[in-house]
Amino acid sequence: MKAIHIFLLFVAVALIQLFVPAQMIFNKETILETGTAYKFRTQPIDPNDPFRGKYITLRYDFNSIKTEDTLWERKEEAYVYLATDSLGFAKPFAITREKLDLDDDYVMAEINWYNKKKQEVSVRLPFNRYYMEESKAYEAEVAHRKAQRDSLPDNTYALVFIKDGKAVLGDVLIDEISIKDHVINNRVKKGEKP
Image 1 (spheres, rainbow, N blue to C red):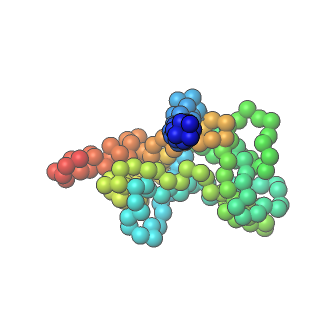
Image 2 (tube, rainbow, N blue to C red; image 1 turned 135 degrees about the vertical axis):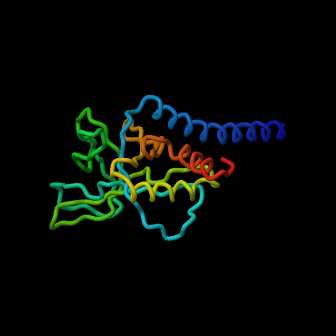
Image 3 (cartoon, rainbow, N blue to C red; image 1 turned 90 degrees about the vertical axis):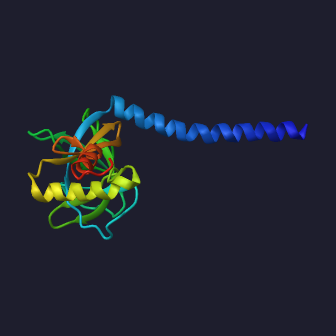
């Protein structure tokens, strides 16, 4: 009798361990399929070490957002409401502590700092890492940095899908080409194995 209870407990635990990651994947795939796509301009970063692992770090061009609120705390969560500019890039138009009754898309962000004199807050967006195959991550970061240094400011951006305050980073593009394909194309040009 005890063996059956242990077996049933084992099966239940195994199913829960499979369900949780499957649910996370399903939620992200749903956002990618049904969320609104926003292009976020990226900025160059100064890496502390040349190889970070299986991702590239991204920084976005709107580091600060004007606010009427005067009492923001570091690491506080905030609603950042988004619109698009004339070129189709995301831009914040409001930041609040509580959800507004608006139809506009928003993303949850964390406050980095608040400048009381300028009435601006800096936010950390939840999609500042783009994960990819480890062997290509460093080359992708170098290509991203080089493209920003050598080209127009609008040639590198992150494509982020947003739905109900949740965001999924879909891709990073350089001159409208996925950064993954960009790395492969560079390897082919050099005569290396993609």
